[in-house]
Amino acid sequence: MTTTKNEMALVDIVEKGSNKMSGGYGIRHLQVLLLFLGMVIGYCLRVSMSEAIVAMTSNESSEVYNWTLQEKSMILSSFFWGYTAMQIPSGYIAGAWSAQKLLSYGMLLCGVFNILTPIAARYADWVGVCVCRIVMGLCQSCLLPSIHTLLSKWAPPSERARLGTFAYAGAQFGTVISFPISGVLAVSSTGWASIFYVFGSLAILWSISFLIVGFDSPAVHPRISEREKQYIEDSLKTAEEQETSVNKPARKTPWKAIFTSVPMWALIIVHCGQNWGYWTLITEMPTYMSAVLRYDIQQNGLISALPYLAMWILSFPTSWLSDYALEKGVSRGVARKVCNTIAHWGPGIALICLAVIPKHTQFVAVAILVVAVALNAGSLCGFQINHIDLSPNFAGTMMSITNCIASVIAIIAPLICGKIVTDEANVTQWGIVFYLAAGIYFIGNLVFIVFGEAEIQPWDEPEITDNVKPTKKESIIA
Image (cartoon, rainbow, N blue to C red; front, top):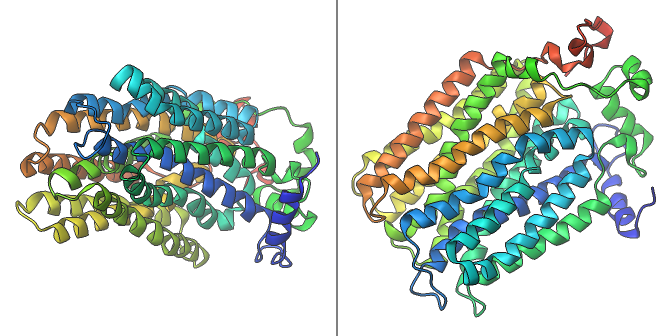
């Protein structure tokens, strides 16, 4: 496989600090940077609708749609209809074919349909918007399974929390920049339609770049140094496995073992709790800011971004402390559960505080929301990275399963909010929404604490699927 001049230039930059095999910057860091950018753009495409819909239904806009609360709820949840349907197939394809190509093509099509959304709105009203969002969800369903599959190949276990957190922190960074940029674009001369044109074009550009510069694993990268390649592979497998991995048959996915695994079900439940709280806030916050706190469209974008900026910043010290704790002898299970408890019970307490206070100033409400969202940073080195802890070989498939089921929750949450909040300016109704999200956060994390694990499961090895017990030397050490 040949490489382009652009790729060689990027590689030269990241290889300058890679004289130390595990301490410097290398190709793995370039790949994770590309995954980070993919997450940024993916979440810009998802989240921008929350801000765009405020502008599309505002009398301040030149092109206004008089959608009901139920129609707006349908639009906000429609992305996840397609997203849910293709989660498990995406995880399987990412593992069996090419996670890099699947992610590139999926994001390319997602960008195209984002650009088509304003046209669909003009000719088919809210139904047309829903159709575009459903197709976008279908296309973007490969995002998390592909990234998990790629991280399992590129991230050594000792760097997993840091590299994984950096890649997944793209979700928060994408949210951070999406809200204010959407607010500025909404009041520009082009109007709210420019929100879809700008983010759709960025998705297309990233897809082409990742198709050229991204690779599925160190083994197929043409420019990676032998030292870095050896370092990554030695970290992931024993020497004996490396010698025979080429001749091994393709791994058979142990579907029954996965679906009957108690730690796997703990992951499913905690992921559902995460999605309820996270997507309730992310889809409804701009409406809350506008109707209750009375921010205008441009202010709305800036203020809505603050909690996610705090979450993004907090994700880096959190991941460093998680890895540091492991180096000091703290068990992986304890580290994951402590991080996730901060990530779920912290926001739960903050949301209860927001609901309890009947009348609050803009500053108090925004401060509580910042705390509620920022503490969720711990989930990146909590339940999310735990998929790889349980099964490096089937991490992408596992993520596709948990994300598929949790995405159903992301569909339901905005619809439930639409049923509860019949008057967008009613603080009491919003309080019910916050209580509900807090309760689900508490229950989901409690299940993870009691039933979650962080050791590699027996079914991770393909020999287990054929009822052959692996020897001690054949076990993967994470």
